[in-house]
Length: 393
Image 1 (cartoon, rainbow, N blue to C red):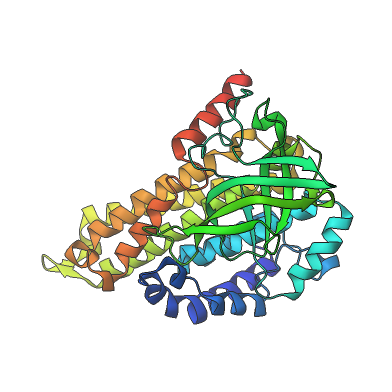
Image 2 (image 1 turned 45 degrees about the horizontal axis):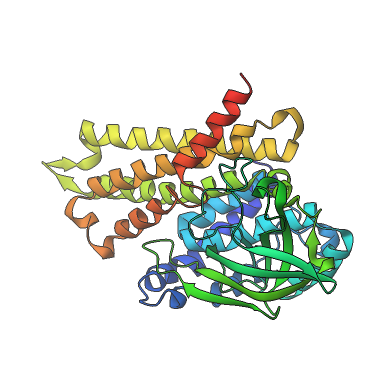
């Protein structure tokens, strides 16, 4: 049962999607250069409607919404466009991380800047070429460490290395960057988290990745070449960067799952509308038992995934015994697999028309494929969950 506040907020999000996102999404998605798929105008309007600062604490001028409500908002955004959902989901969850993991001095220094600049977005630099799954399924092995390093001197840390596939990597104003500060041990015991503003000398962007789907959000390389970060920008303790991920990102998996599920819901809505009007074999498609069965299965899977996401988000809010460690992996796996089945079934139900761009289904198929690998490859996340289960047996 939604609260009155959640009902009102979700209505605002749906209005934003219908008025701002839906009219632009298809044209932006088809731009040849990935940079041109991003829209500052959408970000501006999201800020004007209070969506960019939803998770910012009231003491800093935000709405301070919880993880459960945030997951609902993210799903609604993804019904309009997956990329727009990710733009806001990344920023909303990193605001929560900064508020939980950073010192008061750091919060007071950066959060007012975030609040006051409508185009101030946030990103997190973890994934590296050749090491993308290491932090999702870490082992205490010195060979499993970040290639990006940070060495101490002159009152601060010097970063060198590269990150890639970073959502908002070429757009964000502030980054949480993870680097290896102890090269003799694993990333779980020898990495550190740093706050890195875009203006920091030695920090630049490389390639903006040209993706099959999820195109309205840019993913890009982060390059660090003798990038000096002052000591006051260290988040938490030196060598305990991995703790930032495990302690302050409990809802991250649920948010990724919510983005995936929004795509599934959009595909189901399209399939339902199509089968109610398309006549084949002398009857509307929905009147054929085999079609109605497909629709029933789609609705069942979406409902089950939504319940799992909301359970995980509620547990992240509550903490303590309500939190089950496998919730940091399995909701996204389940939601992405549900989404892939739903979007491909919707494609089938549309027949030849579904293969045409103007039907909108091919975009949902491309977007739906993203989450089988994004935010942790599903196989890796299943291994992560299996390890947790073994340890508890």
